[in-house]
Amino acid sequence: YIDQLKDRDTREKLDEIRTAFTYGEVVGIPTETVYGLAGDARNSEAIHKIFSAKGRPGDNPLIVHIHSMEQLEDFTEPLDPKVQSLMNHFWPGPISFILPLKGSMLAGNTVAELDSVAVRMPSHPVGHAILEHVGFPLAAPSANLSGKPSPTDYRHVIDDLNRKVYGVVESDPATYGLESTVLDCTQYPYRVARPGSITKEALENVLKETVDRHVSDSEKPISPGMKYKHYAPRQPLAVIEGGLKNNTHIEADDDKKIGIIAPENCRGFIPEGSYFISLCSSDENYREAARNLYAALRRMDKSDVDLIYIHGFPKNDETEALMNRIYKAAGDEVIKDDHL
Ligand code: TXA
Ligand code: MG
Image (cartoon, rainbow, N blue to C red):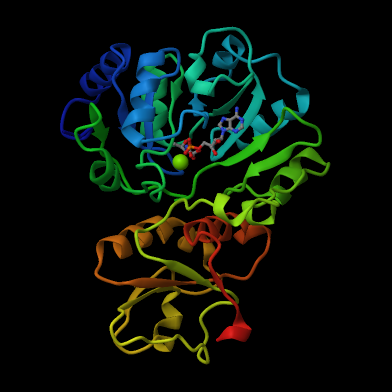
């Protein structure tokens, strides 16, 4: 069912959620990045429920969520002062740190049997209140079916996981709309393992030293068959490199309905009869685009279009996370300017 925190006494609801977690249940919770599917990080049965509800491969470790720095001491080695300074600066917030794991408090399947663990302290008021009330760390991957776009609205969680979870906490749409930056601090220099709203430059400004950039899957020498789709709608999706412009020619096939996801100011450039979803007011508004991306992909998925084109944004430090997710959703399918 839908767990409406605002309808019943909050304290009573928090108690119910804590009890559910104590019994090994899993619950969809809001965070400032995307909604998470949470369970007791110490309880391997709860973690097993998370993996099976999502259909997630067991070798992909989960992020452990905490509300206080003291909790870290229970399962990570003492912090490097550099990591400490990043946490002081960016937590609570949209960044996860991969740290060396200590002891056996966390269930083995939470970290996919690795000797490291990714940790995050969310800033979302409701998510944070739940973590504080529960007291123990909660493992939470994004609350979508594996391969689908992450949920930025509680309704997305219900669409994907209804009946597979104890409940979903209803809250506002996510502020950032993309998953947290993941910074690997088990190697030196630190390395961005997944780009997010907190950029490489922002990290370097605090650290006063360089951070290794994220290497996208398409840059890694893997065989084409190994490429996997992620965050993807059911239809084929292609990125318009350089962005949709007034002279962009999109092949219009009579028996195929085209969907286009682009900034509002590109609406005039689309072929007649295609289905347009506005991502943001203009090309510069990449934060708004990030916030709306997954909802747009989900709407296309539910629509009757046969193939989708998405606007490619200019590449820079600020748009790296947005473009990373767009390329993944497209399975690296790109339409270059010279082919248009
Ligand atoms: O914003 C977020 O991070 C959301 C919210 C719910 O907090 N969570 C999220 O979790 O995106 P998930 O499971 O969808 O993504 C976790 C990412 C995966 O790419 C996983 O491989 C990586 O973090 N990860 C987790 N633990 C790791 C570890 N010990 N070593 C390397 N990568 C790890
Ligand atoms: Mg995910």
